[in-house]
Length: 271
Image (cartoon, rainbow, N blue to C red; front, side):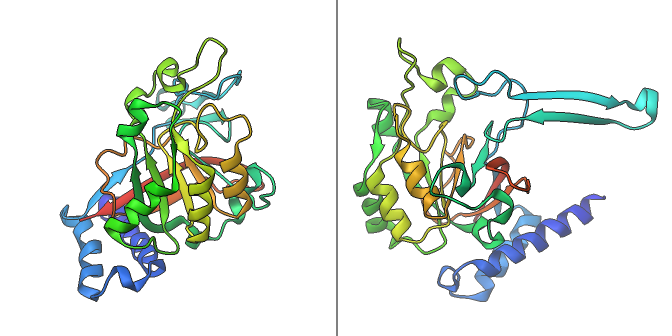
């Protein structure tokens, strides 16, 4: 497909995305239309928050296999190029579907499409995480965001910006394991997760291996969030360029029937 064709499909996709957003985010139609037309002109910024998949990404400790690719045909021999690949559902930038942790039930292919689009809410805890690798973003971090930007809208997607992406893909620094093998990186607190569930957000995400802090033994946030029917985005790429408010996310996971999750492409757009 030519460039114009691909661009057309992107604009149509973004148009569909905009239809799901609360109209309070766009008091004037011209503002909404300007965001769409700005993609072609470059006025609207498009940021890819996903890592390219390969065998050098950081797997969860204990995983023995995570990604393998094999060339099936080459241009020189067959006139075209294809590969086959195998990978874990939870590797690289990926989505956790509700069924991943009880009491969640929904598989990745059953998540309603409208949940994959929403305003981005960015909770910046880089300073706190730099001082305390076990930092758990408290309710006050959500309240501080709302005091500055207004109440979190239903259907938002809340991202925790810890700054941990600066350690990627160095497994030792990214996992930050101690002598006993316990990992240490920031995450959401249970109390913050409960508040976000009450705000009826579509999902939460982070730039670390897990939305729970690395030292967690019970994965309480996983149980709460996935049990409430939300999804989680983990190992998001560098979030430093993303504004705290005003951007919108498009989440595109692999539609794997019966999947507990899978690789995901996440785009942020804003002006």
